Every structure is written in C-alpha cells, then in structure tokens.
Length: 278
Image (cartoon, rainbow, N blue to C red; front, side, top):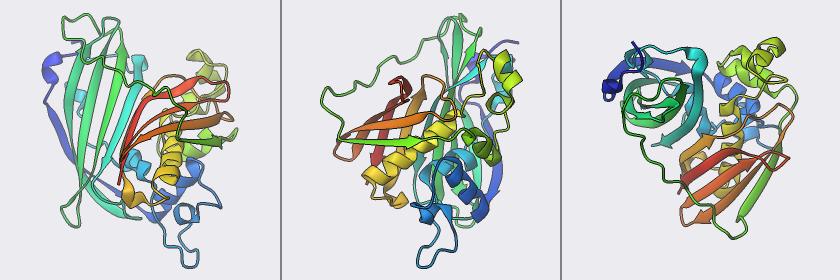
C-alpha cells in the first residue's frame, strides 16, 4: 500500500528514552562546542556546572513517531525536510523522558508526499512536559494521490542588514564525531555509499548543521543561557560537507528571530528559520 493520507492523527508510543551526562557532552562537541563553551563540553570544570545545548532535543526527542502507520514507501526515497523544537524547560544533564508521537500532516506535493510527525515528551521523574519536536520528510514518488498541497507561505528575509552574524567552521571529521550521537547512516561516513547517493564525498548530517546553527542562536540571542531558548524551526535546503564554514545570519524582532545559515560559498543550507527566546 502506498502512502495513506488517512493516517493523519494516528499516534505511536509511548516510548521512553534515557540519557546521561556523557551523551549530552558528546552531542555538544559533535556540533562544535569546544574550550570556550565548557559549560556544555565538560562536567567537572570548577564553578561551571554542566548545562545542555537546547538542540540536544533532536537526539532525545521524537519518540513514538508512527512511521509504520503511514503506508508503505521506499526509505531510500525519504529526505529530511524540516525540523522544529519547542522547549518547556531546560534539558537536564541526565534524565529520562516518555514520548508520544503523532502523524500531524500528510501533504500531496505532486512529485512526492510530505509527512509531518510531532512528538510530545514529558520527564518521567516529574511528569512535567519538557519538549516537543516536529519533523517533516519529503518522500519522493509518493505524491499525486489527490490530497491538499499544504501551506506554501514563506518567511521573508528582511531587507536590512542582519542584526547578528556568527561564523563557525566545521572540521573534516565532523560527521564522524556527530554520528556517535546515534545517526550511523553511511551517507555521512562511507565514501562509496555517498557516491551511490550522488555525492562526491560523505555529507554532514542535517541535524549537525541544525546544532551548529542552534549554538549560534543560543550565544548571540540568549547570552548562552539555555533556559532562555524557547523554540527553533528550519528547513534543510542544501547539503553541507564536513570542512565547510557555516555562517548564521539573524534578524531580530522582539523575542523572535528569523535566521538563515549559509556555507562559505554563500549558498543557503538551512532556510526558513524562525527562533523564539525569552
């Protein structure tokens, strides 16, 4: 059976997920945190308690997403389209959450289908909500089923100069480090597999680019305080290669920010970015 649009509203889970201090540290260095960000990269620095990068939500969250209920499709045709996180509290250095996922939308884009999943996560220890994640996937060849195309409104980048710009270099082995947080897809590590996918060399994980971007937003807009970081949404628009330089441009309006991430050639790699902060 192909993609089933009647699957919208179906749920999955609950599932639980635990993480440790080490998991949070490994993620932080995987998205570029280093000696000038010891609160995120160490757990035993004097007078510096460990804190967790807000975008670690993409590692621990997302549980219960019921992909098994949307019909059949070729996983090789799935492309990660968008990612969003919403935080209701600061992520602790270690903990356990219970998550319930839902098929929140299925759109007919003609050449493919867009499937959107949301997941709500609560802390097991307290029962309090901790985070919500949203991801959309474009599945090539699964469109033309007669469904709605979905929203097409796009964020407009302000014409003025960006209020903040942050540039971070990635390393040639960035993907090898980031994959240790869980995504072992050989597209990011095996040159022969990458060539099968049409890439000259392995590409960086989209969520690694997302994490680099989140670091820039955290430090520029939240004074490096994760408790002030409330939400972040973005659309993956072009592959990033390990060794690329990522430049994040931010346009701020009150407690909201529109952002874009570009590589050193000026190509937009993370688009339609919106972030909120306290």
